[in-house]
Length: 238
Image (tube, one colour):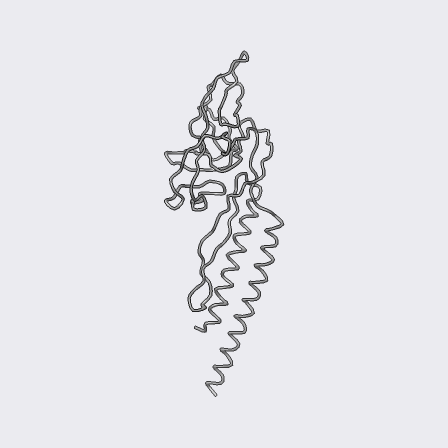
């Protein structure tokens, strides 16, 4: 195969993957706890073009905003909520939890926040920045239920996505370290708030325009290479 044709074709494929990735980021821009991804590529030897090298996810802090949810939680700083379902463990920064019938805090997909169970007679909940969970009981009484710990990883970008804002641990990410929030240099919890996706609409639009122009340039290179091959074949036949 013509080397220039092949290199340009791989360039087109790379820009298409970039466009697909940016489109997925935009589709999840309103999902709490979502982290944007960037398509990465590796150069092929001898100038043969590029090859996909996977997605690199950015865990840059998203904006925190008051949500009014009675059990909503957001993380300010590094870390993940540890959640469980059907014997499986996963990690997320999406803290839109609600109180389930069994007293656990669960998200919309049924994942349960690890380590916390609310008593049946609790009338309200309070979570302090250091993760301490306090149940408000009838008669102005209260009861401390425990403390939410957060999981941290040496390489969070190596976690395996399980959905829009849910991740599984992998050997490349490292073993999860459970840390207590509220320290002088550590993460803290914000109660009654959610973390916005770290997707910038304006930056994403610029990425789309750049990728489209690069795709068009590679498409023209494919056409030029194809035309050169056609001329060469005609000369050979002549």
